[in-house]
Image (cartoon, rainbow, N blue to C red; front, side, top):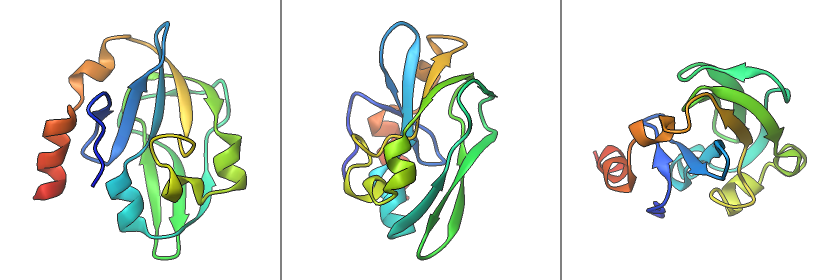
Length: 127
C-alpha cells in the first residue's frame, strides 16, 4: 500500500501535503480509498469557510458506504478540487495526486508537523 514519505497523516486516513506559503493540500489515503471501494460521490466545503481540526468538512460516498471527511488541521479553505466533484473516481485512481480534496491556508504553518509521519501511519494501517 502506497504511503508517500513526504506527507503527514491522520488516524482517520487523511493526508496533508505542505504546498508553500503556509498552505496545505488535503486528501484521503490509498488505504482509505481501497477500503471504501469505488468512490461515486464527493461533497466538499465552500471556499472561504474555516475548518477546525477533527471536525467534519464533507462526505465521500462509495458503492460500499458513506464516510465523513475530517479536517486534519485548522485553516481556511482556499480551493476545492472541482475535478473530484465532477469525477469522484479520481480519488480511487490517484489519491495522492489528481484526487486531492481541498487546499487550506493553515492557521499554524507548523500544524502538519504534529500529525503522523509515513512510518507512524503504516503502524496504524498494519494493525
